[in-house]
Amino acid sequence: MVVLNRIYTRTGDDGTTSLGSGDRRKKYDLRVEAYGTLDEVNAVMGLLRLHTASDAALDKALGRIQNDLFDVEADLCLSEKGPGGARLTVTDAQVDWLEAEIDRLNAELAPLKSFILPGGSAASAYLHLARTVCRRAERIMVELMDQPGEDVSAPSLKYVNRLSDYLFVAGRYANDKGAADVLWLPGQNR
Image (cartoon, rainbow, N blue to C red):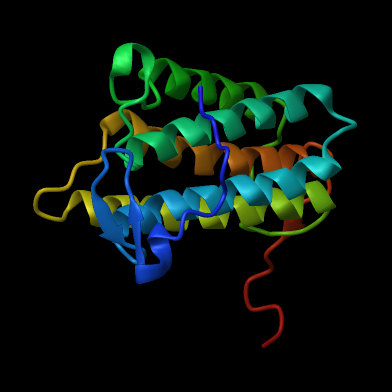
């Protein structure tokens, strides 16, 4: 369990932050950037959930995903606070659950005949915003993984990749199951 008695420590005043392993890194370090960007995804999802209360199943899934995002962040932070003191990370079972949710939502959608523009309902717009921030987090994670001496766990990378797919499908689902999608009209304004 996490206990935060004091919010400010002054240890970051020199431009560094502490990883879960105790190592200190610059605040612009790719590892810090990766889990910070996932925190941004989570914050967008908090805003998004203000617009999903009418769909209990979708809102419940989004709440579960918000919790799972903290598991990914803990992994990237190199936390050693998982069960039995092991490094905390998402698991393949969490990725499988996300894939099942994508399939469940997608089964109710008509196939796309065009790319879609973010918009339609407020929930859909926020889902697409979360998706774009999630894709940025994924790009940072891949860049981090390519750095010498750095590691990103396979389940964490898979989870973030799958999450952006989920957010896309959920964005369509939140647009009246795709009926209110805003379609891209190529060359419309030429």
